[in-house]
Length: 117
Image (cartoon, rainbow, N blue to C red; front, side):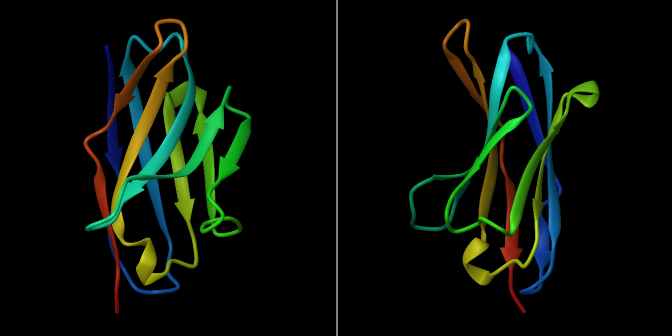
């Protein structure tokens, strides 16, 4: 099993910044792809950003140029740096990991980000 623990959410004013962290533990040897998703009230969960092999990254159009995903292999942690936050970024943010060998996926418990003045 793989455990994912997110942290770093909170209340921030529009235009502000937050950094989310996702610490992975357990059987992480075959984890090659990790991602951040978010789910706003009344909406479907959507992909925000992903990172593969610690290098290749991709972003939703709505966050390009504002969010940056990165990884620290030594700490088994993935980060999501969020700048220029907007009220529409308000959501529960979830960490996601894929074990490519066993074709399994894992989710964290989520961390709430609220962007409001």
